[in-house]
Length: 63
Image (tube, rainbow, N blue to C red; front, side, top):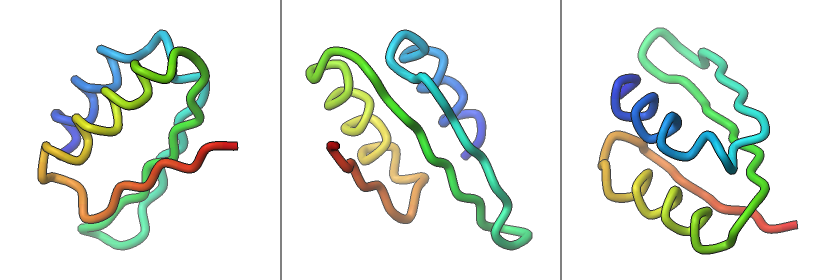
């Protein structure tokens, strides 16, 4: 999973202002991304995370 997340993250560095990575268990991690930028780019990033099928849960919160 990490390779996929890293590749996507590098593709969207222009809108990722913060990334938090934490190990929940030996086989589970949590990634929190704080995004700022064009809504279409943000939607593209979320779509890629959803379609990789490598993540158990993806949620976009708009504030």
